[in-house]
Image 1 (cartoon, one colour):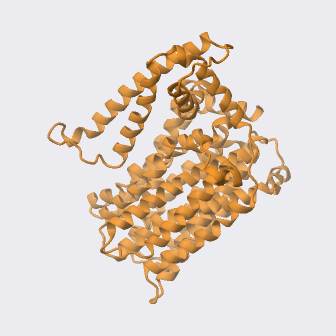
Image 2 (cartoon, helix red, strand yellow; image 1 turned 90 degrees about the vertical axis):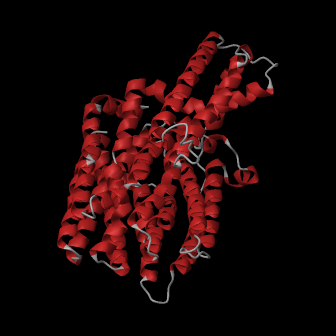
Image 3 (tube, one colour; image 1 turned 60 degrees about the vertical axis):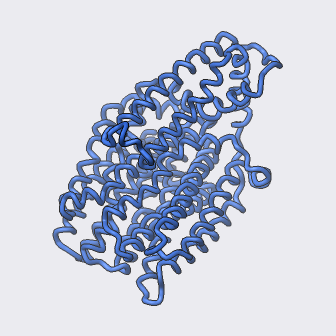
Length: 531
C-alpha cells in the first residue's frame, strides 16, 4: 500500500456500489450507542445522577468489549428460517436490529427516577444486541470486499466510519434537539429513537448476501478434528469443559465480580485471583490443544471413522467454531507479533474513551445547553467525521495504513488539549465549535486507518471471529477503563483541564508500541495485500 496511485485512481475506489450498503450499515451500527450513550447520559444527568454514577452506568458497554466470546457463533450458527430467507450475515443483522427496536420502545415507557434497574437491564440488552449486530455488520463488510485488494478495504473503512458517526452524531443530535423543547420528555424521545431504528432495518432486507466459501472450509477443519477425537479419549471432554470455564471467568470479571466471597479472598485481590484462574485454564487448554494438534498431524490424510460419538462431534464443532479462529491468527502471525498487535489495539483509543464518556457531562457543567450540544457536539462532529473519513481513507490508500495510524494518533492526542482550554475559558461557542471540529477530524482519520488494519488482518474463513476479537480488545480498553472517567474527575476535584491533559498523554504509549512493531506489521500488511 504505497504511494503508487494517482488521486484519480484513488478516488475511483469510491465508485463501488457496495460502499453505499456499508455506509447504511454503519449508521445502524452507531445508532445504539446514542440510546445507551449520549442520550442516556443526558437523561440521567437531567434526573440528577452524580458524575460517578453516570460513569459507572456506562459499564453496560462491556458487551462491546466481550462480544468476541460469542462472535464465532456468527460464523456458524444459522437462525432457523431467517437464515434460509436472508442468508447467514443478514439474518444475524436483522434479528439483532429487531431486538434493539423492541428494547428502545420499552425504555420509552420507563420513569428513570424510579426504574433505574429496568433502565439498566433494557440498556444492557441493547448493548448486547448492538455488539452482536456489529459482529455481523463487520463480517458482512469484509466478506463483501474480500475479493478486492486492501485499498478497497480502506475505502470501506471510511464509509463504515462515516456511517457510524452519522448514526452516532448525526442522528444522535435528534434527542437533544427534541428534549430542548419544553413539550418533550426523555421517555418520549426514546419512542422516536425506536422508530428510527425500525427504519434502519429496511437496509438489511434489500441488500444482497455476500458470497463465501466459508462453510466448506470450516467443514474441512471439523473433519480433521473428527479424525483424531476417537483416539483422544476423555481429554476431549476436558477441552469441552475448559472453554466455557474460561468464558465464564472473563464475563464474571467484566460485570463487576458479583457475590464475591469477601470472607475468603480480600476484594482488593479480585482481579489478581481471576487473572490467575484464567491463566491456569489457558495453560491447561493450550496443553490439551497441543496434544490434539500433534494427533491431527499424525493422522493427517486418514478417513473419518464411523464410530465418532456425539461428544466427539460436539467437541469437533466447538473446536472449529471457538478455537480454530484464534489458533489460525497466532499461527499465521507468530505468537510474538500476534500479542504485539493485540496490545497496540488495546492501547490505541483509551484516551479517546475517557474523553468521550465524560464529554456530555463536561459540556453541561461548563454551561452549554442541550441545544448547544445538539448543534455543536453532534452536528459539527458528524459533518467533520464524514469529510475527514474520506480524506483519511484517500491518504491511507496512497501512503499506507501505518502512516495513517501514526498521524491519526498524534492528532488525537493533541486535539484533547483543546478540551482543557475549553475548561479554562468557559462556555465560548466559537471555541466549542473549533474544538469539536478538530476532535472530529482527528478521530475520523485515526478510525479509518484503525478499521482498515483490523480488516486486512482477518482470515476470510473466520471473519466474524477474528475481527470481533481484535475490535473487542480496543473496546475493552475504552469501556472498562473509560467507565472510571467520572471517578477520576471527582478525584481531581472537578479539574476538567487537568483531566483532559491526562487523556492526551494516554495516547502516547500506543504510538510508541506501534513504532516498535512497525516493520513486521507493515510486512504482514503487504503480504495480505498480495494474497
